[in-house]
Image 1 (spheres, rainbow over the protein chains, first blue to last red):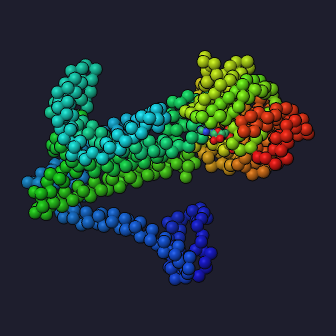
Image 2: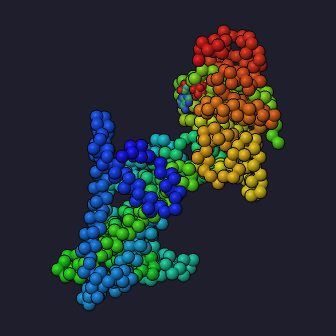
Image 3: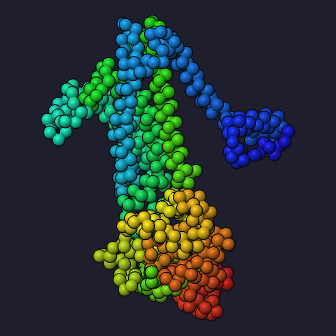
Length: 352
Length: 253
Ligand SMILES: Nc1ncnc2c1ncn2[C@@H]1O[C@H](COP(=O)(O)OP(=O)(O)OP(=O)(O)O)[C@@H](O)[C@H]1O
Ligand SMILES: [Mg+2]
């Protein structure tokens, strides 16, 4: 066994060779071989070091294992619907959900979750980044720590409390103030997204309450990202004659974008999986929303609402598990996509 | 083309909180020459430099008395415009600090800030300033590469180019070579000598030999006091203060 082979940490040539998959497999095999080799030969300090690394390696493996287990479990539970003639993978495009007639289209919930999530993100991300910029660049020092504490406290409020607040304040506000106002104003009345009658419960209420819940995460993580931008960048910009706001916009924000991307990842994952508050204010009606005032039914709500009734019906129950599977895949997809964006951002800035 | 300007400092005192840093400094920087500022670590060299482009204003605990005139105008006058001042007083920092953007964006940052948006004009600025900073040949094919991926010496030359991009008559350099290898350092020293044709340069260093090599005039700062300020040749041969002599012979510092 060639020991130097095991210390090779820069497989640069490997990347340049044409068949990357084969190289990956090859290097994976090689590292397993080296691992076993090291386990057998390491002595003294090297052994301690090896065991330490092993100790750190185990949690990583375990967490990957848990994800795989959960996916397998969801897959297993949703096989009845995915393999039956009434269902099949096509249910993600079907819009009729009617357990009495054994129709289990889940597109309504997917659409509902998507709309709610993106509405929330669309509100929370710009607001949160703006607040974070204010906090880290313009806010007087004494106020800074107060605001940071409040933001942390906001993150700790249980979601049911947000839901209750939305139910008694936000929903009536949309019903009696906001909807009549935009629908009677000729400037906004023609807009299709303000169409339809509103009883307050619906997409807008869900998106807004979700946005309020995401805000603290977005602010806190973006604020961290902005604060960790080195002072030397700011000084270089100021020394060229930039004002504080020009510096914040062109230098600090640009350098913090990868970190802010992380904030968006976190909030996407949380938004799509959020249950309680959304369930209370979205109206939960089996239709696809065409206006902000239309009710929506999100994936987490259908599971929560119907699992109790569905439990003894094989197909119904497994359709709910299929919803959970889609939910899980969606959040994995979001996380993956956002990670790629962050990676790309870091690369174009030379910050790897 | 920029022409250097004169800088006059009158009875400058500065404090950080209660700590008295610079003590009653008065002096006159001639145009188009390199003034080397020497002194042991912590004596206030950076602080001094940063009063000249008012960068200390960003430090909450900073306080000062006295006056600084550039081209006869008091830069701390209530009516003075700090942004146009900083545009005319370029600064190169102790550690290379290119922005995390492409090389080109690093250079065009300043000009864009000051309203130059024409693509050709910006390209020309990129080329001329990188040539001035002796970096053009090394990077001309990779202008889109992030500035932060260059070597330390290249990064520092990029920062010099960035400072030159807004064509400031005054250039403040805070130990620009202290974190670099000897070869990069000597390249930058040559560059400084080259640049003084067009700029008034104040070069902070605690390397005596370097100050002697590149500067026309030299200042020696000790514990916040301006101990000596004279022609470099004069200080090298016969310093008038025993503390200066002790510093240049390596007994204090
Ligand atoms: N932002 C600040 N807040 C408080 N004190 C400061 C600040 N910046 C500098 N000082 C103090 O001012 C004094 C002079 O610092 P300065 O950076 O000017 O030294 P220097 O001569 O440049 O030293 P060096 O050669 O190590 O760079 C030091 O005692 C330092 O502690
Ligand atoms: Mg210094």
